[in-house]
Image (tube, rainbow, N blue to C red; front, side, top):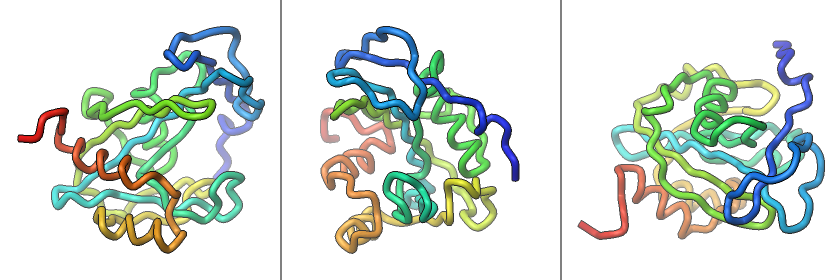
Length: 180
């Protein structure tokens, strides 16, 4: 399927590590200057049994080809917020529509040249009925936390830190600082 928006040059805003927007937007394909960050969004979709919807990246993807990943991820384009980007990525990559207020902000993580915002939502989804974006997504299925950890050990899932994934699974129900 032809998507004319993919032919346009996507621009991304630049930020300090403290999330202050700076300078002019850069094309997504351009190298991020040292000491500067881009904003990345992730949406982890859980079912009522606590399993996460995961997607398999196409084998021709430049970064992390052929690996399983969280439900959806992507760069936040210039002028867009990370919550809106998560909604857009879900619609583009797997054909699911969400209202921005359905998403729960889980956490934000700073790392080399990027700030990653993670959101969660609970919805029972039939992975086999999703409309997958052929350019990016090869397959989708649900998996438990233990299954995802095993996939990481087997080298077939994006090598996220176990502690981060553990925290995402805790935060899916509105976790928080205190254990209840």
